[in-house]
Length: 242
Image 1: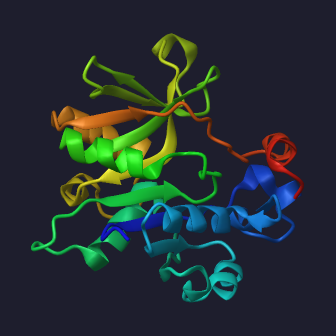
Image 2 (image 1 turned 60 degrees about the vertical axis):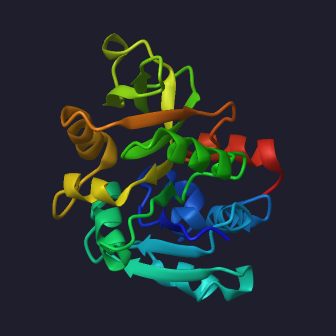
Image 3 (image 1 turned 180 degrees about the vertical axis):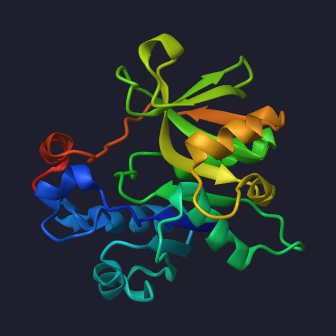
């Protein structure tokens, strides 16, 4: 197993998916018989990461009762409950501060737990990050409609030179969008302010403004998102029955 830790973001309410959720937190919606979050935990374990932190807010007991300590999946799970949502980056700052150690400068993985991720090659993404030696790596994939995604523009060395969250068509011609899989160095925490903050709107722009090296690792896989009832239906039809 890798010594690297993973932070899984699983706190969102997902208002747009309410007709499907039926009193479930979004990461617990089932695809192919298992909750999305379970697919992602197994994916992390199979990728060599067994030390997992999960942030919680909406209906947290459903997640903690199901996964417990994580021992059934041969992982260790630590939970971070947020009485008030902190956003994608705020949640990471809060959790990473628990294991941050000046003597331990290793990178950590962040994944958005409500997207289905097992098609992506996480060891390859980690290897890419370690080779590039930047402050962070964002896994990207090609998508035609980028209006609801974070979009990256890369130079010829895969360095991100611009990152635009949910752009209008006139803002970018790039079709490389954020998968919600990051490998980050601990020094990125200094770009995450206290309280609520988001990677796409706040942190990545701040990192680029400081001329830190943030890279994009392009995958040939496609993200399976379930942000709306229609996307959920497509996910079920594409991967098996619910």
